[in-house]
Image (cartoon, rainbow, N blue to C red):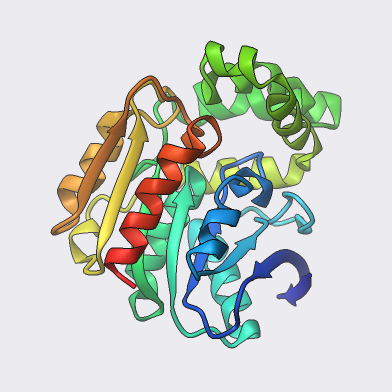
Amino acid sequence: MLVNIDGRDLRYDILGDEAAPVVCLAHALSSDSGIWAEQVPSLLAAGWRVLRPDMRGHGGSEAGVDDYAMSALTQDIVGILDFLGIDKVHFVGLSIGGMIGQTFAIEHPERLRSLMLCGTAPAALEGGMDVLWKPRFAAIAAAGSVAPLADATMPRWFTEAFRERRPDRVQQIYQTVCRTTPAGYRGGGIAIDTFDVRDQLHSITMPTLVLCGDGDTGTPPSGNRAIANAIPGARYVELENARHIPMVEYPELFSSILLDWLAAHR
């Protein structure tokens, strides 16, 4: 389904009983709502309503031509909630989705029941624009596609054992990376590079769980632990032998943690 917000069509899907409490799942840069496919059946079976938006320039959402800021990406979520008439959600965000979640909790705390942040960071990633983003932006500009980044992305996101065991699922996600629009990727990268909420995390008051893979090199455990330490009462969980996308690599374990967390704050 599509909703037009500020002149841009944004895609989302929403499943489950209209009377059920809503869980909003926000994906990583260069993925889309399909990254949560393994969690949807168990969430629906447990009586949750599931909302999965595609970020600007990802999946079925239009990119637009402007640079992005995390507050604007957060406002996209708020706009979808307003369109659907949803007052409050339990928010689960991965990577940039977790940065959106932190911003959401700071700027719109009245809209959240609980917060789960997965493989994310409280500020711009190590390396910054010159080391991390400019070479990537140059590669996708030259190709007119995000495809040049896909090969290097898979080892950061999944262990070798998973890539060998589930080449079909890895190929699906590889193709999702390739289909991300260059404008959407660049906009998301700029939003990440200008992101810093370290001095505001102490103001987050809703129940918060931070989860990270121990082998996540993109958003390392140190940054995730820093988030959990800064938010009053937050919990931290670190998964062994996991990288950036544990909800796909360890779906049963991740879903168990997710469902237990949501049930405790239903």
